[in-house]
Image 1 (cartoon, rainbow, N blue to C red):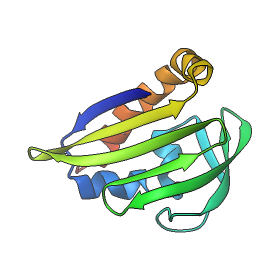
Image 2: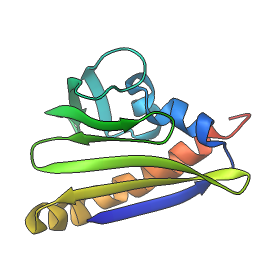
Image 3: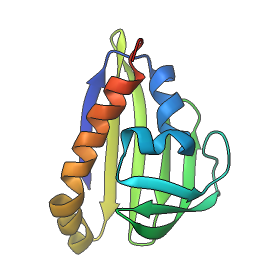
Length: 129
């Protein structure tokens, strides 16, 4: 498992609004473009298509704990998204799960994108941004 975290001065509710709605993903995760996902917050069992670096990927939303966490499965990996209260702000965590070769590739290719996406999400969720 690979885990990435950052802190935001935004409340967990403000982070969740961006993190759990496909229409906002491209604002903070510029490597993603939802092609076909439902409107509103992600929901367990939902299946959609997202462009990841221009490559169409089928993703299935797994567990959802509204306001706290959700994950998706892409066939070769699972990506967990979580927001927790952290003092007056929040802690945002993304974890990638998969077989060793998948994680090795994710560390090399996907890690820089995830780190930038987390920082962008933290900043965009802050009031006045």
